[in-house]
Length: 357
Image (cartoon, rainbow, N blue to C red):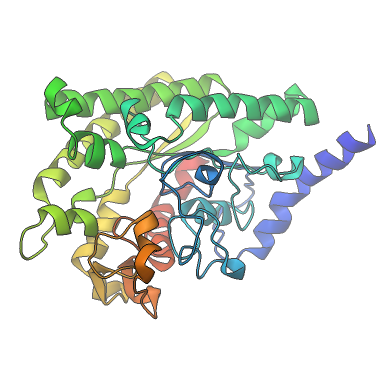
């Protein structure tokens, strides 16, 4: 009984203490969030891929160079990523841990984790191609997670935590840029309209399943203009490394279907808060006008010199690393820097945070 009492104290006090300490938190008055729970890919993977046999990993220098203690935690950036920024904004904690970290304690679980896996996607084929954790497995881990909460603080309290927590979904970029655009497998089976419909329907089904499992506040990130990441520009952008128009058009088709599908879903789930997080336009604005946000370059990467370095290629051959990542939008050839992530996340959250409540 003493253990349960102490755990409940932690649950009730932790968000309030952290919220007071985090200057970036902008919650509406009289609102609190017990946990942030995330599903997704490398944009929000805080280190789950460290614990599986995959080449899609970054638990080595120079990744994490500007993270607390200079640690390479498995985050695909030089520092914090959106998972951490979301946790801060909602007043929960400074860093969101990966669920597979074997050192997690119950108090870590109570305030949320990331189930995301770099290289994953909505399409079941995507994680198979990249040997990472599928969305189905992330959902399985979430069910395991809720079981642990029930054992620690009761089924009733777990239901309250889930209903009040913020759930974030961030998937789709690998489906479009890798599975559909780089490989022939899906293009043989589906045209772009069919494939984007499949992805959108999977996302909507996931939102419904999370609702059935107790989630009520669900934010869904659309897909950024993946045709403008450095890798795609280098490989397919021609001599002048322009953004790949066809890839961005595919992304926009998916985003439109996701948005309209969520509008319909809100009508069927009136007590749910389904929030469409428009990452596409936030990133597009920064890429088109980097100087406006204090960046020197949105086309070059901080890590590497060929603008194709990613993961292991950012570590092999002692590639160059820029002196000041804050001047760059992209850290490696696919992922933004800590500062760019912060600008993007704050741009999106500042416009939508009230919609969660």
